[in-house]
Length: 322
Length: 248
Image (cartoon, rainbow over all chains, first blue to last red; front, side):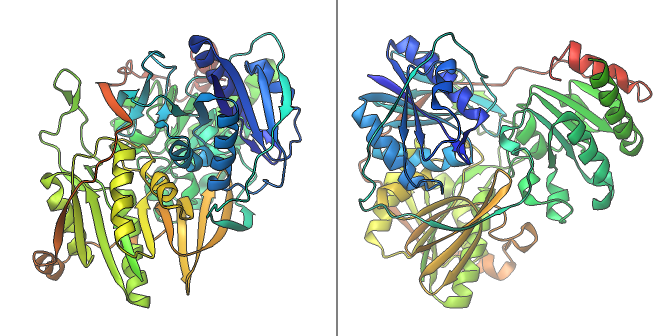
């Protein structure tokens, strides 16, 4: 028996979400009394041994020309290694790629699939895991009715845990010549070199209160000073002020950063559905009656064009003194 | 071009979410149901493809007869016919098996689903369906173009934009971008009238195992009251974020 964790990489480097997934897998494996095996696909620019620090007793590398992600091929490879290792559970971080491959993986692996887990399993004898439902307006305890289970975890929901000790690294052989029907990537354009929103720890977001797209420089400056990703509300992406890839909310991206700063966003229920899982929320709005204040931890009633540059300066000053 | 659009019947985006039956069930009392917003983008896209290239658009859902008003709305928007697979949709694998059985009996060229439903947010059915059929699958799809029998798709993820191609048949997990919000079709009076007479076939569910079930629902912990900070004292906010919230 073993627990396999898909150790996702981007341009050959481990994603931060991967360390969290390995930490999660190690804790699940400990309660099951089984081995923790991390699995990487494609050529690495990182040292695979680093995953031992997060609890992988062994890291298996599958080398080859897998730089371009393919949900079907990746699911096939993970399934082959899981079979070789006698795995009963596979853990995948709920990144864009993780969400794309987990359903195929669960079908191939003949396993139950529980997506968007927000906590460690409540029970591992009859496996049950809490997950977010109704766009973070509810939580549900899902039970697996299969002997095998695939779990995807919400990035940044559980956190990393470092352990003492290093794991071994070995490589595995797989056969991907079979009849796998998949989309082939022709082209990858970088939309921006910024921090990916779904995995960001800090997010600065703005809405119609910014009045015009050219006013976003103060938002960008605050985000840069904090090392945060930028996001926006739905109306702002619908009118084309900001790209759709920044739209957070019920029909956009659902996020749960450590800190979400909302500037000039009133806080419609559909917006809250995408961000209410954030650990701390700061709302800056001219309207003291904005519904967002009810969902906030900290609030400033004031004009964004006055408050945001002051906040950027205050963070700069704080960083200089600490 | 025969297109199948899978739709979910979900609570309206403004619904208050409550649980009943000792937290074992979602409380549907007073809740308005709508076509899952992610699915609506795919439905309009499918209608555009049909209008350009000919063919048909069928909508399918797995649900009880309570879902029929939602199905009729999809017909009013412009789908040609509808299939309701008569079962409660409580497990994604069960739903995917139902849809796979339907697809295997009909020669669809393409299945368009929303990337997830806004009730359970599982994001599981489209990928499972593609795996059961062994058809190419793209998730979080924001663009879909057809050239003969080749589909070109885009997904925007993690600060990059991937463009991929595959030969039909395919499964799409779609979202906004397939069409823009302003281009979404809404039912007009003529559509509503004709929807009443369009075929809505009820089909028995095939045998399929369920892989999961819900033991209990909970509401997230309530937030404490907001701490307001004077706009002339933003340094205080920075101090609180560092010392109290410990997030910076």
